[in-house]
Image (cartoon, rainbow, N blue to C red):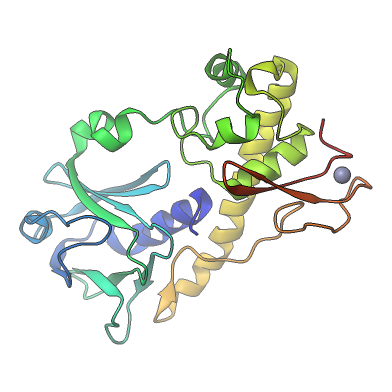
Length: 268
Ligand SMILES: [Zn+2]
């Protein structure tokens, strides 16, 4: 499943192709993904110039000179194909630039979404209004205030998009391991001192993954490149039963219906 680093890498990859270019043609090859596509998508995008690309939580944003932003979410299986030699069954939405370059949103499971939102209204848009701060921008003090009084586990609270936006299961596990915090600890009981280790750990795990994804961007000059998927290595995620770097053994537990990987020796 694409997480924040994949979305960031995707946005940076799309930026190289779309930024400053006029959208010559768009093609919606089906009326819906997870929900219906805006009916005026083609009309509003065609002929516009892409002025800005950005990311909010796990959403990518393509801003045009008409004041619209195309907001995409990759769902479970979505990715953009760059200059596909032929259009495939799962290429649901295509943008072609005035240079003749094409990007195709490919999403076999169709849990992704495409919306068109006025750029100056993005912060109050229903799906964005309740989102917490960006994990790459949040401070320990801010996180402390958001966790205050909460008895739910720190693991589940970090996955709550209203507390911190766009942080997924993998990076929560990795950041808690680096900060030495037990995933079952009550969120409100984590001291500011420990949050001052956790917040840089969150920044670092995401920045390292984005850098790993960025290094794969070079490959997207070739046809049929797929933006946003790259191999990563993890300290605890997916390593149940294997030794951790600190001398313990990685364990898997289930919290909120999802796997948590942690080390009982290193995390308290
Ligand atoms: Zn350990």
